Amino acid sequence: MSKAYVVGLTGPIGSGKSVVAQIFLNNDYKLIDADKVAREVVEKGSPVLEKLALEFGCDVINQDGTLNRRLLADRAFSTKEGTDRLNSITHPAIVDLVKKKIAQYEENGVERIIYDAPLPFESNTNKLCDCIVSVIAPKEVRIQRVIERDSVTEADVRKRISAQHDESYYTEKSNYVIYNNSTLKELRRRTQSIVTALREVENGEI
Image (cartoon, rainbow, N blue to C red):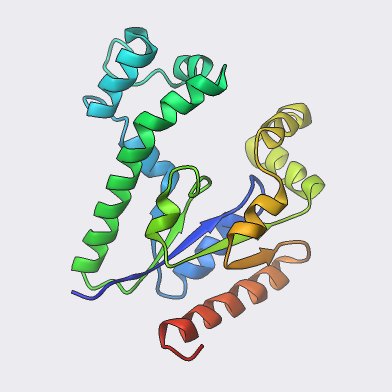
């Protein structure tokens, strides 16, 4: 069984990661979606869900056994200490599940994986990647995209963005940076050039 080449894809909200991810998928990569992984680890009956109930209160679990996400968020994100406690419970489980998904792909002969993750460094899943690609876009452009995409107010979007890292956080921690500050055609061209460069790295040409 050969090891798959894992590319971590990250960037701030509204940067255009989904478009970039699709281009990787069109180039024979298989996807691991960190948001879906995060939901899986807190599914009904999971050990993580039990730990969250012990830490944040039994009422964070609904009567049907599912997670009350809003209540958990209210309690966990109200303080840095709460956020840290939440992360200490969920992040190890996320790492383990991502490892399993990578292994499953490798068992099926998959050679390339794109790991779409908004928080790879915080969850330590960046250590499972061979390289990190960040997608960056101007703040005002990102705000408009999220307003249109999620049908939310500008104030809501600005609040979400203010809670995230600034651009330099991503650029300093990444092997490659895609600047999404032009047309969709240009974004595709820039992404394809990264895909080509990574293929050369895989083949030992760089």
